[in-house]
Image (tube, rainbow, N blue to C red):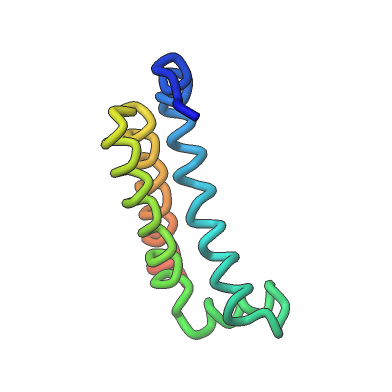
Length: 103
């Protein structure tokens, strides 16, 4: 099935990239939890991550998926969607900064 240029034009929006860039690291974080720490509750896992000061580094690693999404959008000439992914990455960088400063 071939995607037409009109269909690609619908995807090439800042908000689409922003939403995908925000959701993808959350899915990676949940997958990490499910694969490695399924035997404890999710809120206990997050609390332990905060107590052990590994929440910010873990979140930073989860955001690496945005790099692949960015290059995919950039390769397909979806520049506005790629900008949205960069915007979502900046949102996560701000969250990591806040967590490192205050927790």
